[in-house]
Length: 75
Image 1: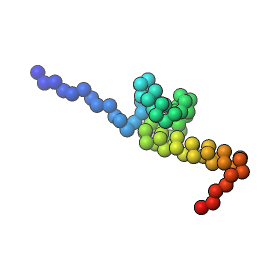
Image 2: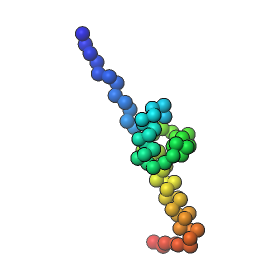
Image 3: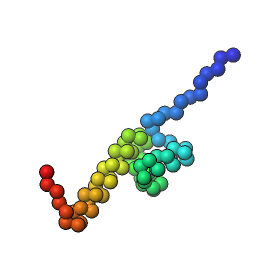
Image 4: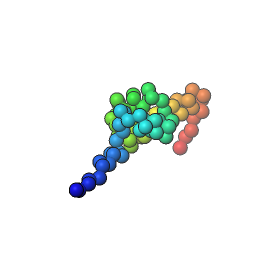
């Protein structure tokens, strides 16, 4: 009898129905459930796209904080 291998999970996309994936992605990116859902609704379930969006949002938050405090940097 031939035995086939079990299907391998797709590692480039995020499955919101899998609680373990949700928890690991949230811990790695340090975001809340609501933020993860909002980002997935906005851009989709690609893990790289989610990571990039989190980085962009963190950068934007830092820049807003710097402009509120009056700190400006020139290149």
